[in-house]
Image (cartoon, rainbow, N blue to C red; front, side):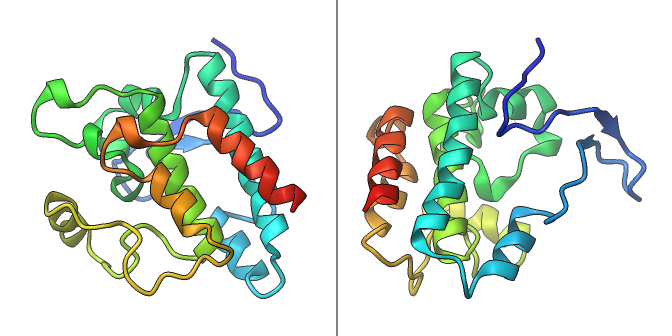
Length: 187
């Protein structure tokens, strides 16, 4: 299946040529670098409207993947455990029991919530933990990925928390997210 959308980078292939035996996806070079780099260069001048316009592009790409029945969680599952980004992976995909590891659109919403947290606050999920083993331990204890002292402004905390609910059934839907983002852009 070929995926073509303005908000989805094409994947040219995989490689292990970056000094590690871990596989890496090869996509076109982005002039602004990673999302983290982009946000750090714009942090002081990035308005809430611009942040929500960026999130709108992310959710439009996610909506396309959903329509194509090819969500983020499906991509992660296809890659196997080695490529999962633990900070962004929905809790239900990390369980010890294979029955718990059923990817869904709700899993994609959790990952989107992590991106929204990053865009709106400038912080990664579990930002206060610098070691993957500590992240694993925090997740096992059910710690909140947002952390105390995280500022998002404009009451957007509730929006992000609804995406990051530990219970998949309590998460927003993609359509609800699109509507809330459109409202935030127009206000």
